[in-house]
Image (cartoon, rainbow, N blue to C red; front, side, top):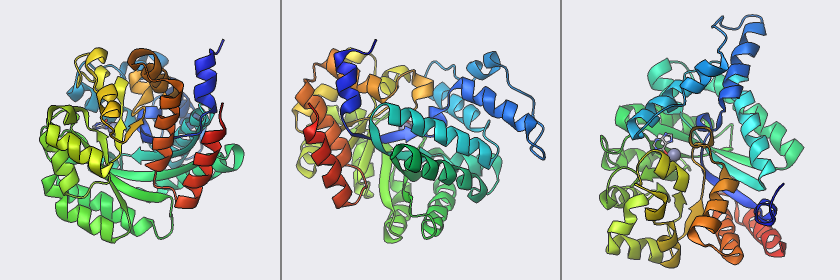
Length: 343
Ligand code: HPA
Ligand code: ZN
């Protein structure tokens, strides 16, 4: 039975700002995709995946293993139909948690680098799902094209320029980002590409300070990132904390992700409470729910139960998520007013 807290969390209109489409796919859905593929005339005849085989893809023990698991899941996606079903399931689950708007990373960088295939046909499936979800459930969704930083700037350029080109036809492509392994590639090599993307009208995000120290976050800010994914190590640098507070740079905090990838040694050591108390612009997100076994509602519940966020503070987190979204101002105002009505 749903608890009072769960009901309250579900009622809060929220935005999910750090969620990877591929990391939202459950092993069960991967199996279903492989079965549907077999039944579809003309589709690639790949072997049907058993549930055990699918589940095996989700195992990892550290951050590098996590990145490999993420790649293995992405490699299971072959067609527009696969991307469509994955997107539809993701949006259905978000809607069930009271998420009214999502800004979703799609790893175009992985598709380009490992598959050497064009992205437009796959994107058509995502768009079909996005439109269907908005019609059925009222949830809105923007896409963020994510490059893999350790593949280098040339690969990232392909991803960002494709986003710039496609957004004319598909305004749902709102921005770009870099994920992957910061220990191998920092933010600086992407400076010019970020400038180019901004000039093309794209919004800028970056994973930063997840597996490296505060220098990684300074780097992301310095190349113009408007939102920081993770920002786990900002706590180590008082000057950075002051800048993040003063500029109210939104942080896409992903608590369970950080513990599960061993980026953070334990839940007790996670800085989310310190960030909030220091006046930083904290948002709560799930990152890769199928890989971490925790969805957005779980993350808010964790904030309440592990980090003592009161109901009013949970409302503030939801408010931050809407405020920090890339929605137009009038849509933000409408959702923020709806949020105020929740009791
Ligand atoms: N960090 C880095 N790379 C990723 C992530 C992440 O949170 N999720 C998927 N790829
Ligand atoms: Zn992420």
